Length: 293
Length: 250
View 1 (tube, rainbow over the protein chains, first blue to last red):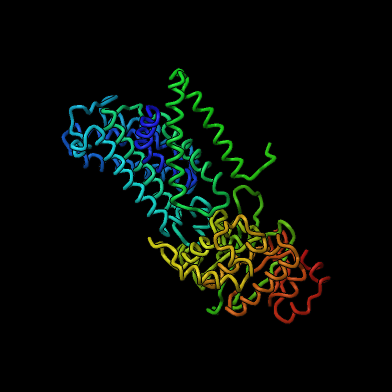
View 2: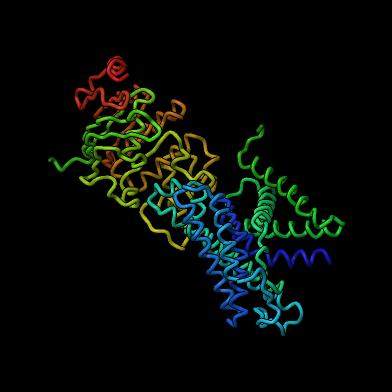
């Protein structure tokens, strides 16, 4: 239990970002590294407004809006596939480092003295903030499930599958890239703001590697789901469930590694190797190439 | 000027940055509503480039292409998509391969609809079940199969069905049956022809199949090194023999 509970808490906190990654990496099929920066952007905007006396909920909303803007920015860089999505993300990340620093004004901001987003949940006892967090995440999850079940969601998947054909069918394909990346980065910013609130501070370096973690977790989850449900057509519920399983397994692994005494300094090395294993497994499946060299 | 023309290609030249010579030179050709133009030519003759010029894949270097008396560049993406469809031998250009047959049907409907927040209704499902049955006996049972798992013939039949759901004004066929086995290819070609006539669709088709070139179409055009080297219309085309095609067109 003392491994499961922290793993569950960490998973819940990380889940909005994983959903964002699912949108960009899983649905739009673009690897958007901006997420690392949007995560910090969310935390930075949230912390700065909160410490200036703005209400916590409004600060959270502004943080999400900032994430949308980052997503729109990186869409502009990618527009027309003139710049590869990976490079566009690195560029956006590079720029966001300065932007985040400007917003915060210093490398980190403590939030212990400011109002708390989860103040409403105090009467529920010490676990109140987690109950409220789960409530929030359920709302986000319902929104995502609804979105992906609509014709709009289908078009987002079509963009990831064959954006050229989408354009030939007379649709503004770029518009869907903007929408998808804006939502994806908005979710990452939301996750950053929530993380800042739970940890009690925002830090300029807190986003390091979150995109990779998210991609790893989502790939693990989707691979597992795929493994147990062969040749199924797309199912929103199964995929979203897969994302959560992936995130949970990932954090469970971290907690187990730490428990069995792996030096935290080597943790990224070990996790990196695990991710390589899953990413390779996913790509042979995708190409259906049994005798690949 | 006769305003009845559907497509007017005037002194068209296409030059791509990566090529030293123009891939299409001084193409001058007019297509009337209801025409079925067969385009012949060896590999690299510019057949596919002509299709790509008409469907706006390649930018025009000089000259112009008018579709319904209006330069093709002046159409919005949505308007052009409603009127002009291109089918090639590569089915991945026309299908969302990782999506199911039904999802492809719904997406192709977007040629004539805007994107909304509602999803497929049961009536739409039933509709496409019956609609696809007229094109291929297996397709109705495969509504929830991803397109990548269909056979080549099923894919091409599906694409034909999708594109005729709202018949275009102009259909561009770029060797669309060349990747199929002879029997399936024959079926798809015959079916395409029947639909063209039924819906009064104007068509430009490139092919390497001389039998098809003789059997179909009321006009014939041969390209070599990016130029028109031979044309035959109506009666003249009907009297062409296989040996004539080999002499004049290659």
